[in-house]
Image (cartoon, rainbow, N blue to C red; front, side, top):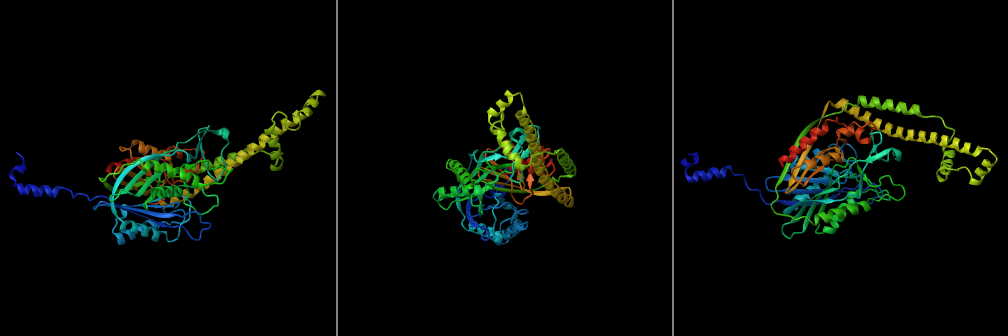
Length: 501
C-alpha cells in the first residue's frame, strides 16, 4: 500500500505544493545600444557600439553584451580589467549575477573609447529599464558569398594562411582551401504587446576586417550588417552581432588590390541574408531561459620543439638563396618580355629567322640564358616570401613560449551556455577556427545550436589539433597558447554545457 494513502488529503496537497517548482514568469527582454567610438580616432567612418540584451523570466536574469571591438581584453583598447569591472558593477548596481553576464567582441579592428566599461554598464542599465514581455523564436539563415577560409592546403600537405603581414604562396603550390560555415544563427524577440521586433541576435563566422575606402574607424562588415537589419526592422529594434568561429575565416577577396576595400558591400549582403531568415521565424510566448557558466582547464603548449624546427627551416631556406646576375631593375622588363612572348621574347621574329638563315643561334642562346636567370631570381623571391612568413610566425611562437613558461602548464577559461527559447549558444574566449564550430553544431541535439568565440575574455587563436600540427606555420598555429589536446576537451565540455540547457 502506498504511503500517501495513510495521510489526510489536505496534507497530501501541502506536500505536493512543497515539491513543485515555482512557475517561471513570462519572458521579459530589453535592449539598448551606446556609441563607444573613440572621438580622437580620425577619420570616423561609422559608429561603434556596445549593445546589451537583458532577458529575465523572474528567476533568472541573463545579459548578452556585444562590442564592436577586437577583443574582450588582452589585445586592442579594451583592457583585461574590463570584464571583471562591468560584472562587479552590474552585480552591485543592478543585482545581476556575474556568471550570467556574457560579453562577445565582434573582432572588428575599430578603436573604442577609454570609458567603454562605463558605457557598457549604461547600455545594460537602459536595457534592463526597458524590459517588456516578449515572444521568442530561433532559426538560421544562409550566406556564403562574403567570406573565405584563409587557410590554403598546399600540395605538399602543409597549410599556409592569407594575411596582409606576408605574401601568398605561389598558385602552383596551392591544392585546395579550408571550409566555411555559411549558417547565420538567429534569435528573434518580438514585443508581446504589438508583435513588433525588439531585438535580434545573429551569429556568424568571419573576421570583420575588410576596412573602408577612407581608412576610417569602422565597425566593419558586421557593423554595416547590423545597421541594415535595424533600418529594415524599424521599431527601434536592436541587432546584436555575436562572432562565431571565425578564426580562420577572412572577408572574401581579402588580398584584392584592384579596387578600394569596402566593408559596406559585404555588410549589406550579410544583413540582407540575415533579414530574409529573420522574417521567416515564428515567435512564441513559451520561451525557457537558462544560463550555464563553467570553468574549463586546458593544457598550455610547449613551443620549444616547434621553435627549434622553425629556426632550422629558416636556416635551410637562407642557405638555398643563390646568386643571380639580375636585379629588380633588369628582372621586371625581362620578365614581362618572356611573359608576353615566351617563344621569341628578345626581339621581333624576323631577327630570329635571320639568325637561323646564316646558321647562328645567338638569340636562342640569349633567351636560354635569360630564362635560367629569371628562374633563379624568381626562386629567390619565393624563398624571401617564405622567409617572411616563417620569421613573423617564429616571433609569435617565441612570445607565447615565454608567456606559457611563466604561467604554468594549464590555463582556465570560461565556457558559457545561453538558452532563450529554442536558441542555444555555447561560448569560448579564443579565436575558434571554423571546423570546431562545425563539429559542435553537427553533434548537437538541437538544430538551432550555435557557437561563439571571442567571448568572456581573449586567449588568442584556438585552432584544431590538426592545424596545430601544421608544418608550414600559419598564424593560427603559432599565435596560440594551447596544446593540441585542448580541442577534444573543449568539444566534450561544449556538449555537456549544451546538454544542461
